Image (cartoon, rainbow, N blue to C red; front, top):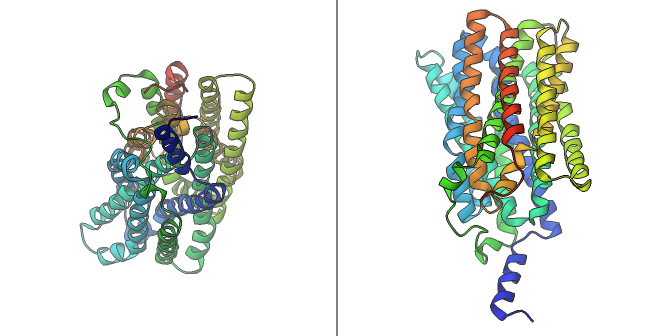
Length: 424
């Protein structure tokens, strides 16, 4: 028989995991949240061509507003992951949701109220920065919550499926957002998406309170300090960070600038086609990446080989599609290239995006936060620099080549130093 103290410890540890019913409820809730967080995030890129024309903003001005989101996004990643590992990810999730929902809802008032002021660009950028800071808390707290409430073998697939909510959110913006834009105005898009997000926030709080709060009776999975120096000295960690940053550069630049690209290059194309059709590829590619990962592991290959293989599929798909996009002469071929690039992000969700759970199973929230902090740097540097390239060269091909070169760098580094084994 087990000693009494050990038996109690095992019972508490088992009780801290979600039941099957709770797992389903939390999956649906978190998937809806990830969908809405991306819907609100992509609302600004969708509306930027219209708003910038109305307010007479230049390309660099638009670049400042588009990139300002990521300044805030980098500020809260590490802290929110660390706090989530200590007090529970669901609490941080609720605080974050209220922040990014409210700032989205108030965005049209800020733009309109200060539209005639010379500082309007900076004020809008400041609100976007605050919005980004709250959104930066979402994924670290979510992966921390998953690590605390799921068995280790279930975490990677659960999280990778949740990331498909980003595609659903962009589809929501492309469909509902485009409909509202065509039939009403750009302010209505912000208010509807912000209102939906506020409603989800209220449901999340009710959902959190209505479930039995196991966190009240069990300690978080991590009860000791993360060995930062040891982590920062490991090449696999930095290969994960750099690979994530390079892929994010591709994803964030296209996410921010593609509506403007199609508006400039193929103005005859309907907005809903541009903002909806390419994103249809991400969910099936995420599921395919998950199935391939499981098949490779079942075949006897290591987690390291699996992660590198799936991530290489992501990078090669993106690089080839970017080079093809440079020569695209019709909107159909451009849409196809963009769909392949976004599909590649679905494979990323099953490789580097889940790698923190491999490298640091007991500190996944903190490690993911640190990885995503560095990974968000391309959000403001890459997005702003792309706007600068367009201002100087007036060439989208140069932007696509710039993204492809960064992807090549990330692929090489992850292949050389990436790992699926725990390092701390």
